[in-house]
Image (cartoon, rainbow, N blue to C red; front, side):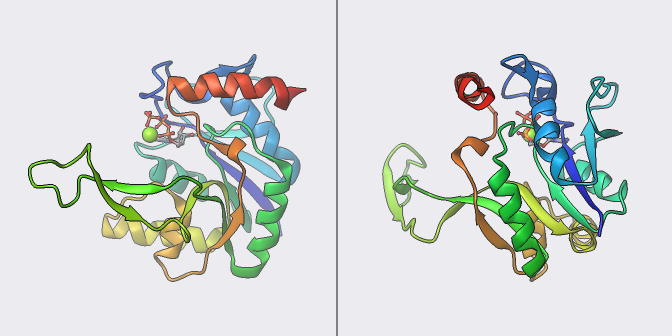
Length: 221
Ligand code: CTP
Ligand code: MG
């Protein structure tokens, strides 16, 4: 059946401090344009949620709607704006999307109806400050076993009906989530973890933007 890419791009980019983040450029191309161009070849249509009062830049193969107050609300509006059977949800703030990850997600989607890109955690993980009376951070607390831990990225792939039901349920319960796979998993649906890619990091801080500039040289060829 038909498929759509849903791109939440309606955030204000507070931590980056450069205005609405989707319009910030890396090596001459906006984060939004990079995300749209990466996903468009894989789907029938691309929908973007933008901040109120902003416009889709000319020439992008996408349709724009106005986003919500939260990422969760922006995605819910995107879901309501399409009838596609399958959706790929992807943060505009992750401008480098390897084609191989998209293919793996679409394959996994056929299995469970839900899949996300994720990376095994490589660093040692420690909880700060636990068991130290009077201190809640800054001291080594308990080690966290990292063997089973994955860092969740986007894109994430879903049967649209399944994700919409999860959003409606969360909304009616006032449950807030930072990610869509978590909402679906909360419904008892099995979510496949597909190997992501370090280059799928989210541009969040000024340091991330510097990293993106450096990576763009290799990515753009
Ligand atoms: N997003 C959205 N609608 C919102 C908030 C966020 O569509 N109301 C989108 C952002 O545009 C981004 C993605 O969700 O593509 C991930 O959010 P985040 O990295 O937190 O971006 P911002 O919210 O813009 O940044 P900040 O939290 O620093 O303000
Ligand atoms: Mg945010």
